[in-house]
Length: 373
Image (cartoon, rainbow, N blue to C red):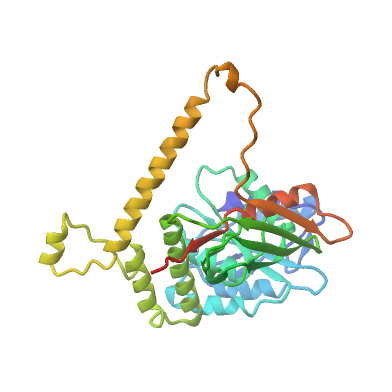
């Protein structure tokens, strides 16, 4: 942990201001104020780190409350929380509530350090506070990770993301509120829709304070997408549990979580797998196979996909080596399946790399098709 923090400190520039705080049951600050990250400041911070020893527990609430006091109206406050997240279970609801009370210009980033971390909690803390989570383990290049993370802190690629869908009716989308798009961290949106398509998806955002828009025309889906459907169900379950944790009561969503997990064969805290040899064993133990129809459809979909992939491999292999003279002419490029277009309504267009990042963010958009009965 000491080496990780030192790498983050070394990645700062003199334009940054910095305060260093260690905590267990209570926080201890180094400077008592935000100081410019000059070489002298960084040297003092490094010496402070070298003197630290691990002791006490992990009480995140007091540390965050102390960090919020450094917020000023003239510039954003980035709080980087480096921890294994192994805080008391009873305090997690209180911690999530505290994030809602943060100053308007404060963003919380979390960095899980070590091979045993409370990953769900650290991810939710960052998600609820507008930041992103990263994880470091033994063997990672700490300097490279720190430099990449600093880019996320100092300049989000896009903020205020909004999706508009036309041509079909989208529902059950998660996350309901899109986070900011950071460098190297794509935003994935899962959902369902009613309708046959094709349909248009339009992404609107702000890049460096300027409006930005990008659109994609998606073709109708004529095949089953069992893998995508299960990914949607997994994300839906996680969003239900996160919402319940914020409210401090999972009992309300537990029936819905169990229903989704049984229908889509997903392991959760409330469901598990049972594997029997044949249908006779299920009848013997009086187990209702609620997902039998879905599993059969999933197997057929997988077989169809494997056959298609094999056909593509054969076509690719056939293109290797010398070709007959009448086939060596120029071949037309295949038509793209997705049409991408973007428009910049600001006076100055975003920097060249930004559009690519938005494409990466838009690319993983997955919509599971709702089957008709």
